[in-house]
Image (cartoon, rainbow, N blue to C red; front, side, top):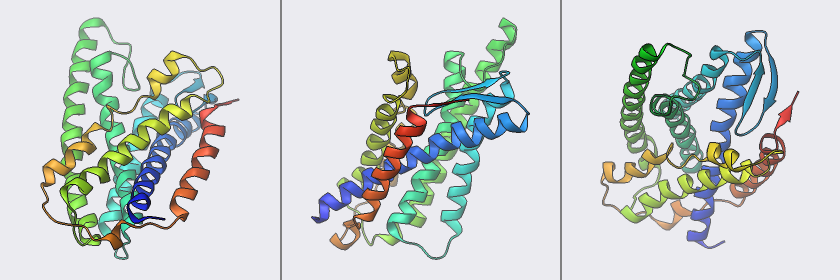
Amino acid sequence: MKTYTSFVLGLASVGTLSYIVADLSHEALGHGIMCLLLGNKVSLISSVYFRSVPHSFITDTGGPLGNLIIGAGSAWYLKNTSAKHFWRSLLLYFFASFNLYWFSWMLLYGGLSGVGDFILAFAKNIQLIWRTLLIFFGITFYIISFKKLATLFRMSIIPLAANFSTPLLRQTFFIPWLAAGVASLVAAGFYKSVNAGTFYEAINFPMFLPVLLIPRYLNLRTKISESELTTSIELPLIALATFIAFCAVMGRGITF
């Protein structure tokens, strides 16, 4: 496999796997476990939707909290692990990024739209205050996550690849971002009752957009060697097999 092709496939695999982990963190780990802890019943779980009987605001908040836990845990592990490998570390980095940005997005989106996991049925005047707080905390968490993740990339990823050129650094973020967005839409297409609303719910390009700003924020001016570009064929194969299984199960949706 040619070096640059290997690099692109590796980055696409990282983006796809990281999206799957973030989605499972939100729907299965977050919503699902919170629902079961409350003694409620899961009626539907998919890559886009979660339904429980009875419906509960606490179950709703479990989704973003699942993202926060997995995102913070991935960042902590990457920062503190001693044995590091470029591709495994990059995978952990995007586990952290997509999960933390998903949590931040749910705050911000709820405040702006009035729907989502953090929205409660308050009176109109209290609802306005609550949504304003959600917007504030959403922006705050985005900024904090962005700065922490930029520092994490500089400290934990850059040293593993001797040098990065600016174009390759941009691709290191753009390709996983693009792959995650495409993977989400493709998985949604497998939903048993798919419609336009399903695809709308699956769009995650805006959610993960801050990853594209990291290269400019880091402002690196160095060069990467070919040896760091290459990944083995195992990573793309693992990503492909995992994605097929994800589409067949979570994409299609499971009803209980």
